[in-house]
Amino acid sequence: MDNGNAEKSGSHAPSVDVALVCGARPNFMKVAPLHRAIATAGRLSQALVHTGQHHDFEMSRVFFRDLELPEPDVHLGAGSGTHAQQTARIMVAFEEYLAIASPRIVVVVGDVNSTLACGLVAAKSGVPVAHVEAGLRSFDRSMPEEINRVATDTLSSVLYTTCDDGTRNLIREGIAADSIRQVGNVMIDSLFRYRAAAAAYPSALPESLRGERYALVTLHRPYNVDGPDALDNVVRILEETSRRLSVVFPVHPRTRKSLERFGLLNRLAAAVCLLPSQSYLSFLGLMLAATVVLTDSGGIQEETTALGIPCLTMRENTERPVTVELGTNEVVGLDRARVGAALERALNGRRRPGVVPGWDGRAAERIAVDLMLRLSPSEVRNG
Image (tube, rainbow, N blue to C red; front, top):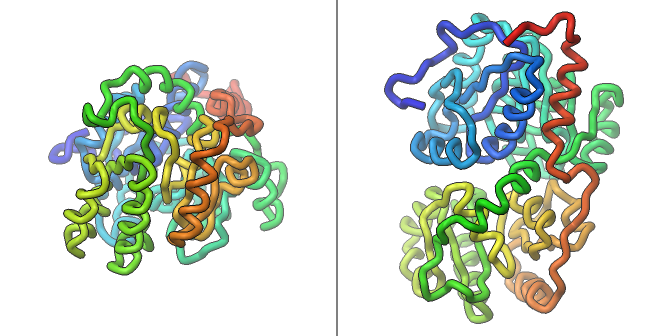
């Protein structure tokens, strides 16, 4: 991945069966097992297309290294910007790539801008779209991710769901049942594959916290970190949490900028162990050793459920209700009383993994088999 000399818009791109799209940090953990499963099956040719939505190229490289992903076959170089600017740049570049590569199917994952942009271009170009992690719904249209999810599902020919509620949501919305395949959770594929490596990874914790109980925090959603009132409340919650146990907070760059802008960084640093953003293995190592996790991330709600680590979701809703139903996750918003009560339950409860059908480390294998069946062997190109 080269910021200056990236292969933009797929020039000289060979024709492939599957164009596998990734663009931002949440995508990498989902794409890695898919790329591996398709390669291992050996029946379909594929191209890994990085849109460049995650504009920190060095951080992208770290994730690719941790997840054993090869260099992308194509880098579209979209970069950052507003939702409209970023989505538009990805659409223009991906349209040029499609004209050259002519993939037989485009596989998109998750709910980032790259997911919608590439799905829309492919659908308009007559190329079938497969959406991995389809059907998730928070029912909150103020979330850009919810718009991306709903629109991508509408455009998709094949919809791979992670669990029962995703499948039910799609059927309720009128999606044909024969386009839906409930395959499990590719995020958990990565989790199980790298759990042992992460446990052995050099700890990012300062020496003084090693062996201690701590709460791990990850917050980046705009409604939590972009405004002074909400962010001040976040700081208060973390200060109160730090009176119960140590708090470790790898700070997302967006969140750090807001803390600095609103004059809250030094105050928070006095109560909490602040760390820079972590690589995949480093963060997973921190999560494995945590007593409780406070987050606004959807993927972390899933990972903590699979690991049996209590999770407090600092949002008013979740698109992963199965994590709440299993009792590993509580949705607490930014209500300090709710957070305090849930923290008390988490600290005094028993850790127990949440067992969800298909969250077994083999979801990507099931998707690869389904793709091979759809792209019949007699027509599959050698690659």
